[in-house]
Amino acid sequence: MRNRSLLFRLTLMLLFFSCAAAPNRRAVPIIPNPAPVEVPTEQAAVPEVPAGTEPPSPVKQASLPETMVMTTRAERTLREAANIAVPPKREIDRFVPPPLPPRLSWPIRGKGRAAPEKMAAYLSGINRHVQRTFVEELAQIYVEEAAVEGINHDVAFAQMCLETGYLRYGGIVTPDMNNFCGLGAFGTGQYTERFPNPRIGVRAQIQHLKAYATDEPLQQKLVDPRNRYVRYGSAPTIAGLAGTWATDPDYAQKIISILEHLYTTGNR
Image (tube, rainbow, N blue to C red):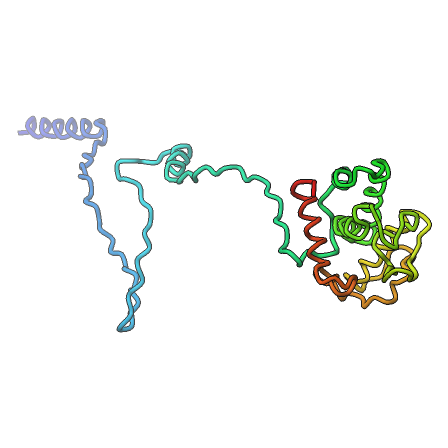
């Protein structure tokens, strides 16, 4: 009996120490993948549309196909470039000079279109007896003097061609007067203005044209003796010279005809 009790105690002790020496192992339960949870989303409120009116059309938003996954910036750039429409090629715009104003409305002020060489060639082609060097110098004077006062030198030169008969003269005005626009020439036997040289004669004509075209002051000393008789600014266009500068009703038409021949063919 005593031996059994001792044996029982030894067995209990062995069991105790064997349990204490073994590691503490715990079973880890395997948790399956959780099912996706659907989160309810709030829908935007749709505004009420009054009766009798059409609802606004929905805005279309661009979307990519589900099979295309944009992973890099380069891919996005290529995708955007592919959706951009290429504009059609256009022809290079060619310079087109501005058209001439309608007849009789050509302004007296402004810049001329003809070069001095073309002006001289035009006059010399009509009057072959005039000295070519003198015509070239005269054309250059017209360009310079008109630029000072802001007058179209083409208009002044065409007026000179009309008044002097392309430097043929033949009336009460003679070449030695340097009067290129008939200032003071009202008839045979009456007083006609004279000027000391061609430049002063052209300057007087330019100043007289400016008096008709505008009421602005002159840029140079007054040499036009008949400037005070003009109603300043009364004829800003060539049409206003008919019946004022000259009594001929076709005076403006004749100047414009000379201008057209000068611009187009360079010959009369």
